[in-house]
Length: 190
Image 1: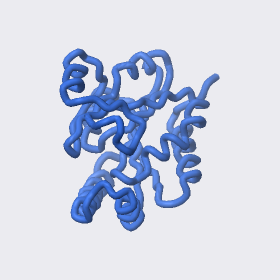
Image 2: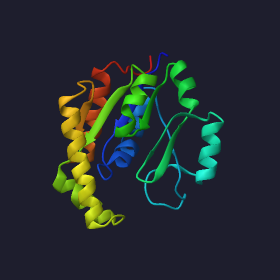
Image 3: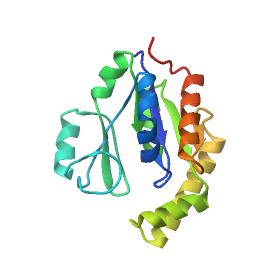
């Protein structure tokens, strides 16, 4: 594969969807496709631009081999369409909104994957989650706790994980993402 898979991870509320949307145009200049995930939640749900399916539909897609990657998290199933393999083979880069818990399997399948962990200070993350209003205070605190565990684990573990802070202005995070991609051999169109 000539293209590079960019695997964006981060806790709920870290701003992954906002970053993806704000970086869409600069990513196109790098010959990078942005993937829409398939998720087992209703299409009316607030959040990322995803394809909402029922559990039965998701399972049918999985059995038929329609996903390059898939996982379950927080009571939902997530799938990355198999189209990414063709895009990568065609030399296009691909950005996916991935799962921290599925990173090892994704790295096994795509050894040149570029893992990017979007981080945010706990107080900023707590405020974003409270403002979003999808979870109780206890659920938010549990998310912050899990985030702390993952951050500590990845800090001492795999040096290949690139951290990108999104506690400040989104435009700065977009610029930092583009710099990170250029530094890590994600060339643009020639």
